[in-house]
Image (cartoon, rainbow, N blue to C red; front, side, top):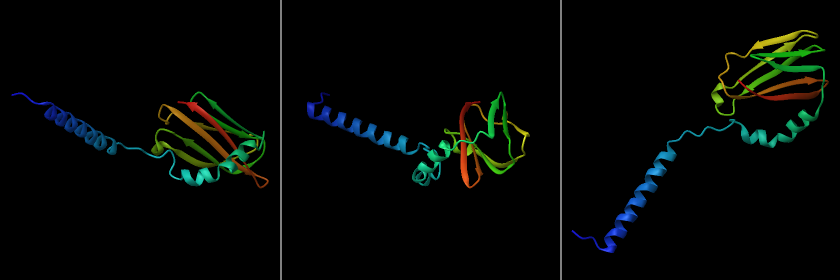
Length: 139
């Protein structure tokens, strides 16, 4: 059986449509999580984050030593927010609040974190000013 050029064109068009429909189905089933749930609110307040980074407070030191996080301060601080942010998986994020005593080093074990890229953020208030330290690290 011989197919004329019109039939060949119809077969090619149908194959292309089948390809497009199959790609739409495959792409629509992909899980595309947001980097953060409140990304819109955070973008509106981004200037505040820039200002927090510009504030300098040398009384707090944050060090990542092998599998430990060491936080120390020369003054007493309460309500220090520590957040471990995983850009590739929102479900692995961890955050907690700590109190730091003057001259005492707080040490936290990081061996429970999954391997990969992490962002550490430490935020504290002092004299009605908010300060922030952010560090990227690989675990």
